[in-house]
Length: 237
Image 1: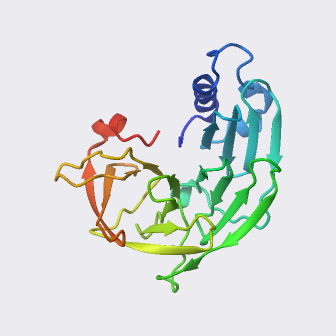
Image 2: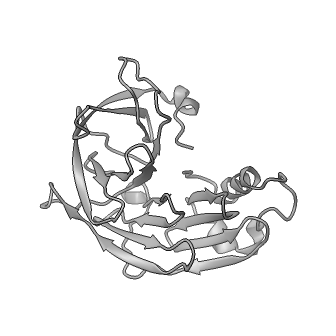
């Protein structure tokens, strides 16, 4: 997941996804859609199996063909999101079948876009805690190891495990909150934290990188902060 200059980020993503490398036709140029590419922030996910890139901005979701300039806008019914003045924007992650899942950074609801039909379904989550709070998600990833999605709340610093059916969200007890989460990634199996625990998730905030290692019960996790100079080793691209 990337946040920053969307035109540069998308071109880089297209280069990585295209088997033949980059050329002038590998990705749509920024000039082809100035309003979208000049957005201050964007999230993107590369789907190399289908040679396409998903892009999320505060205007919604767009799907691009890596090999050409085809663009498909995908409306999200009743999607709720707030801008950068209130924290990091919502996130987008790809599930195991290539479906795109989009969060709101205001409410605990997910929008799933079918990988084949591009049909959108809305999934309000049943939270097992914090039902008296406004819980939205600014970071989302899928963990193949656990067969579930994980999401983080920017304001509360809480971590949630979401089932693949997108029905329930289970709050993970953290050794301390991770407030200000802007990106979340699953780590390769076997990566250890400084204290010897296995780090299964990596979180980026504006100031720090956090490793997350789960307890055997999977109901709680230990978190360890690192400095931004170690960002390249995070894996949260």
